[in-house]
Amino acid sequence: MVNRVAQNYDRAAEIHRLAANAFEEIGDKPRSVICALDRGLDLAAGLDPGSNSKESSKKLGMTKQILEEAIESDVNVGGRDVELLQRLVAKEGEARIALSGVLWNSNQKAAAESQYGTACSRLDELNADYRAREEERIKKGRMPAMKPRGASLGFSIDDIVGANEASCSRFKNEKFVEEKLVWNEGLQGMVKKFLTLSR
Image (cartoon, rainbow, N blue to C red; front, top):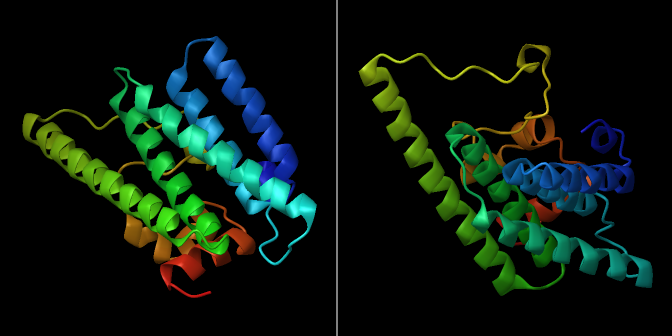
């Protein structure tokens, strides 16, 4: 996230690629996929929406491919850590919405709408599951899950949106997108164009 905030998008993407590989090697598939999704988000943030150069077209193609592959890879993820899996689905929703903006900006309207529809459906299911689990936890008098180490400092390795914060409507809130997701103006602009159905 530090490199994304500093607008070093290629470096941030490379670090996320390395982290995804490292998590994969130790058998932590959920965190590997989260890092792969973050890699795609880093590349999407580094796109220049107004440029038509050959290099920009190549980077656009690579960004779409990486996001699509990372999104597809989360289908095979399983585990017992429900909270981690919920965060994975939330990150997938974020990546799908970013991909919607990228696709819309590339004049691939139907593909953008499809990604957005799937994101909203998955995030709605996530919210329903989260609420049901919370109600069950409260009803049974169990303690809430512990926050990740470092959460009180404002960061941790799992510093991503949780199930209680993820919904399609949140992506229309500029403050949420800028401060919580740390999206730059370029990525925000692409997604905003899609959400307002403008060119």
